[in-house]
Length: 257
Length: 269
Image (tube, rainbow over all chains, first blue to last red; front, top):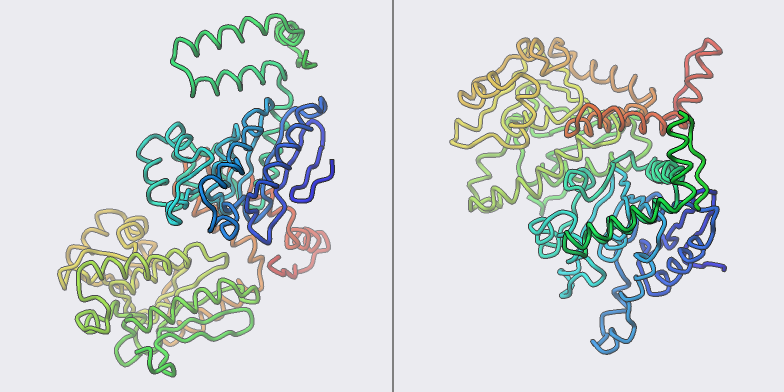
């Protein structure tokens, strides 16, 4: 499908989604989310794609929502738009999703980065939830994913104070995996994606699912879910290939079966 | 004050790829007050943005570099520091952004230490990348003399140059550290006769401005990164930095010139 607000490139085994409204700092409108979700749906079905990079390009990841559009809205209208409910498509994506963040990732932009599986940040990156300065709060997971990632006190600072966190500090807090020079962020994320693309796809999917369940479930249930995924993988061809290759001291060729 | 826009406590001039930022109250050894802060901030922002500027010199006019904060003004209403909270506000909102801008400026910043650098003046000198000092120049962490603690990043920078013991001695006594000693300790890069500070700065700045300034900026950025990173993280950041640099025009030109056995002509791109 043709996209107007994003760019979708498939360079097998990697897909790259680029938010493409630099004039408005990639503000996240419902239409943008719809296109991101549609693109992820396409990449989900495309067997040549094994990992995906989500980026805002060289200058800015995404700086929040369209405030002009929101200022006079009422709660029922806001509810009816289900603005944040639409984001479920991002977390439903089953392949590794890597955020490549340069410049501001603010509000919804920050929440979008926090929904990804790994975050590669340029040294110019800034992460924050400035919604508080507008009389509202984060609405797409900012108050929930920050404490699960960086702990309660950092989450309070970010959500109550509204000040952005710089790349190096975000790295120290465990919110980003790696800080690289900003001109190399997208390339670094693509390289991580290509590296993950060499792994067995079914195992990747079940590992991602299990890690995400750890943030939802009590430990015993989480361990149970993990164990079921673990047993299930013994039914895959890739498990046989992986173990035989290991024993034969050669590189495994995974098929995703 | 600001009502007299013609008054310049800090001047900015451009000269062949080099921007000269000069503290300009020589009769008082260049103290830093409200106007100097406003004008220095504007000048730093301007030279950071201006791509035709490939090297910056920060220097004093007259006998001194900067005698530090304008203490006379600090006590007055127009100094904007009537309460202790005001002191913190000026440090956080005015000095800190300027000092950070110098240290993150994507081009070399040379300090022409033409004389005394005291208090916040010493901090500005230390924030620069390279220091060329007059033979009679000296550093003084003068804060303690008026009952203040060091500021302007001095507690972070000075121990890194001279070691903890020497730094704390300077903070406790406020006694001057002479240029020759500063050179021996690595705090200044070299000492020259007083009359030659400006020409030495010009010579170095002109040479740097004609060099691979993008590579210099990359090196400065990697040094800044390394200051808060592990060795392993620094190695990794360097590798990425070098990948970026390896696709620059200056690298192509550098290699081509090397193979053709001629002097490279760098553009800073």
